Amino acid sequence: MTPDVPTDDYKGRIGNLIRDARKHRGLTQAQLAERLGTSQSAINRIEKGHQNLSLEMLARIGAALDSEIVALGAGPTHLRVKGPTTLSGSIDVKTSKNAGVALLCASLLNRGRTTLRKVARIEEVNRLLEVLDSIGVQTRWINAENDLEIIPPKDLDLSRIDEEAARRTRSVIMFLGPLLHRADTFELPYAGGCNLGTRTVEPHMSALRPFGLEVKATDGWYHAQLNRAIVPGRPIVLTERGDTVTENALMAAALHPGTTVIRNASSNYMVQDLCFYLQALGVEVEGIGTTTLTVTGRESIDVDVDYSPSEDPIEAMSLLAAAIVTRSEITIRRAPIEFLEIELAVLEEMGFRYDRSEEYVAANGRTRLVDITTHPSDLVAPRDKIHPMPFPGLNIDNLPFFAVIAAVAEGTTYLNDWVYDNRAIYLTELNKLGGRVSLLDPHRVQIDGPTSFTGTELVCPPALRPAVVVLLAMLASKGTSVLRSTYVIHRGYEDLAERLSDLGAEIETFRDI
Image (cartoon, rainbow, N blue to C red; front, top):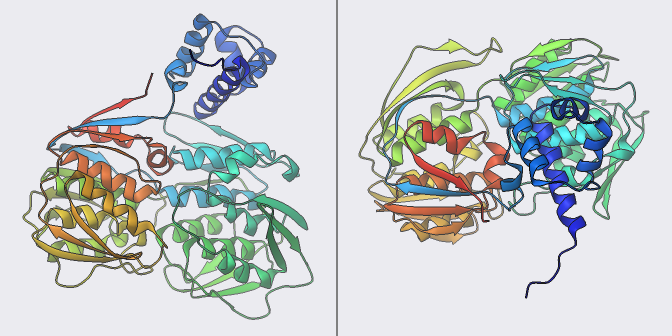
C-alpha cells in the first residue's frame, strides 16, 4: 500500500510548472487568464498551489501554453537515442548562451529599455529572468524570434530576490558589478549551476575591491557592502583571466565616471559582446579583443538600446563534434570563426576535412562568421596533448568535445582540463558506452581509440559540456541508449535534441509516468 501524499504538494508542484511554462511563453498572469476566460486572481491561486484543478482545466492550460503540463508533472526529462546515426542537412548556430547571461546582468546598468535580439531561450536564461522579475525588472519575450525586452524599475527591490532561482545559476555572481552602483549594501544567494568542483570567487572580489566593494560569504549568502569613497586609483590587474571576472570589472567600470584600466582581461567572445553592448550604452571601451581594456564610464545610463548578441562558438563546436563522431556531412551555418580557429587547426592535424565559406558579419556588426561543411574523415590522435588556454587559445568549454572526437580517432590522445577541479572525471562516462578513457588525475585523461560505441542507459553527468559529450557519443552508438535527467543540457542549449533530430538523429524525449 502506497503512503498518502499531501495533495497540497502536488498542487504546489503543478502551480510551479504552470508558472514556469507561462513565463517561458512570455505571458503575464492576466494574458493567460484572458486565454482561459478566467480571472488573474484565479491564475495567481493556481500558480501558488491554492487552487484545485480538474484534468479538463489542466488540458486547457496546457493548450494555452503549448505545454504538456500533465506530462511535465511526471518528473525529469530523459532522452532515448537510437544509433548509429548519420546526420545530413544544414543547421544555424544559435546566439551565445554566455553572452546572453552577461547581457541580462549588464541590463541592470541601464535605466532605459534594453532589447536583446534572438536570445538563447535556455534554462540558465530562464532562471536569470526569474531573478530579475523578482527584484522588479520587467522582462518579456517579444516574439517567436526570441527577442527579449528588459525594463528596469526606478528602484530595485533586492529584499524580494528569488532565492531558489538564484541558487540554480552561477551567473548571479555577475550581479555584483552592476548592483554596486544601485545599493550601498545588498545580499545575493550563493551561486549554483554546474557541479564543477569548488571555484573560488576571490578573483571577483579582487576585481571589485578597487570600486569600494567588500563581500563576505556566510550562511549561504554573499553580503556586499560598498564604500563609495574608494575608487580605482591605478590599473586593475585581474588575478585570473576569467570571463565572468572580466565582465564584473567591466560592469563596475561602466558606471564609474572616470577612466578604468583593466589588465589581464579576458578577450573571449562573451566579453567582446558585453563590450559592444556597453559601447551601445555610451560607455567608451578601448582594447576590445586584447588583454588590456580601457573603460571610460558614465555617471548614469538611461538610453533605449537594441543589441544582437553573436553566435555561440561552443554550440558550433558541439555540432562539429556531432558530425565528426557520426561521420556525417552537414553544413553548420553562422559559425563564429575567430573563436574556432584553434579548434579547427587541431582537428585538421587529426585529419578532419571540411569546407568553409567566405567570412561575413554577425548581426552585432562586429563578429566574423562562416558556414562550415563537414566531410566524413578518418582521424588520428594528435601528436601533442590537447589543453585549453584563454582566448585566443583553445576554448576551455570546447575541450570536453575533444574527448568524444579522440575516442573515434586512431591512437592515444591526452587531454588536460586544468581549469576545473573535477570536470575531467565525468569524461570517463564514455566508458559505459564502450570508450577507453583513463583518468590520470583530476585534470588529465588518456583516451585510446578508435571506439565502437554501444548503447546503454546512464544518468546525465551534472556538468553541462560532459553531458552533451555523452549525448553525442550515443548518436554514434550501436543500439538504443537512454540519457536520464537532462536538465543540465537545457541549461545551456536550446532544443538541442529536436535540432539534432532535424538533421536525422533518432532522439525521443520522454518522462517516467
